[in-house]
Image 1 (cartoon, helix red, strand yellow):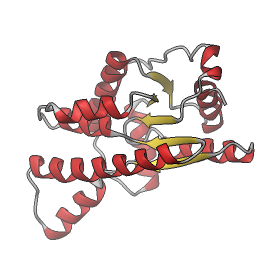
Image 2 (cartoon, one colour):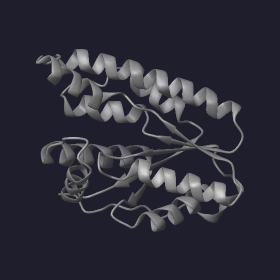
Image 3 (cartoon, rainbow, N blue to C red):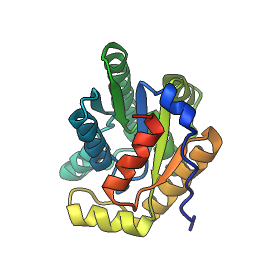
Image 4 (tube, rainbow, N blue to C red):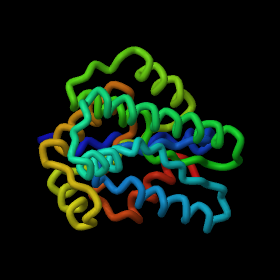
Length: 206
């Protein structure tokens, strides 16, 4: 099991070059949505314009839908639908972010679909990795890293999703690999939300 890998927070120069877009990624149970909502609310309380933008792929919905029908979609079919939905949401939210003042905080991104492809044993392809990199050229990406055991406990406590320990472990490993390859900032998601918000405010210089 990987130890929590936390890169040093950005140098103070980022305070003079704040990003317009912050992308938060991480495995299920990392607290992405909770942390983003707390960050956006705190920024708004300080009269700083901020928006939360969700780049969902409807994976949970597709899983529940297939179970309700008693059928199992081939993983390539599931990936096609998920990639299409997530790509549409990313494109829509990028357009919104470009036209809106303030900070846009994106909950998940195309890299999340690349993680799913890796876990399913599918090749990444050429288009999706290119789109993921191109669409985040001017964004700052932060990985919320969490121990799979804690992530599993969080997921079970909210009772909305059903993820295996194997999936959580493998997805965490893949996110850590991508963070190392692309130089993302990695934060310890086991910290209280208030502390994570403080660290994210250092990341964005606000």
